[in-house]
Image (cartoon, rainbow over all chains, first blue to last red; front, side, top):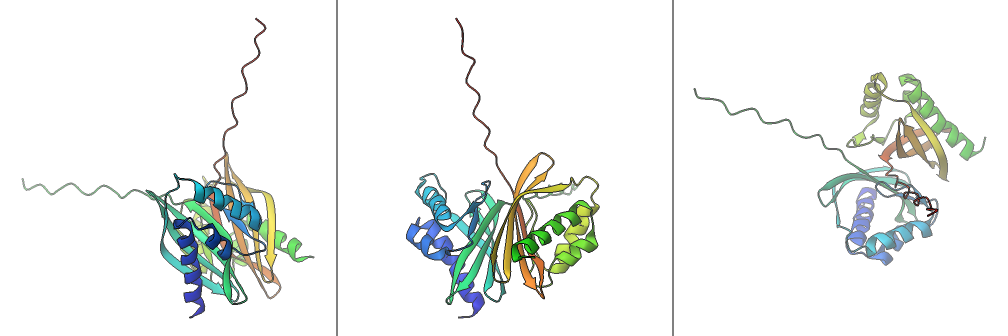
Length: 132
Length: 132
């Protein structure tokens, strides 16, 4: 599997764990050191234990809507990889960065930031052409 | 200078260039490859030229308020460094990630994402104690 394919697979595993509310899966994906997570609107959370605690609360929340990813793009430089993608949460669109580090051949998540996308509304369609 | 000090100096140079509307300074800070910038509310921008073009528009905008940084925290793993900090833009607070890569001994910016911080309002103070 190419670096890009394995990176995208790691990114997919993150969203799979999220949708399945699989905290063990989430724990396997997140790295050990120098990790940071910025949930939408939240202040940054530093440290593996603190980050996983935040996911425990989010994944246990019965009101949490599923997060679907779209339009992934991978950026890789050596052992540092990022996936930038859209997250669809209910009717909201977010832009997410998932930063990974290659550790012993596996991409581990070390950074997550999701921020709301402000979509400009489409201009109104032109009025229908009058035949008169 | 330690890795952390040089990383924080590179982060400071980014905000100095922003406040001074110094596009040449901005061009010197941004890296060449695998760069991505996510301005608040915007879709992601990929590629050095496209990212610098976005800064040209922002820095030329006379309505652009200065961006002041606060509460920086550096995370370093080998040649990958991140600074997570608050950005104060007018009355708004943002959380920013600035991702750097060490290239020929210099930290070059390869990733920027800023997202609004939703500050919970303080609970209202208790009513004054009645003396009656």
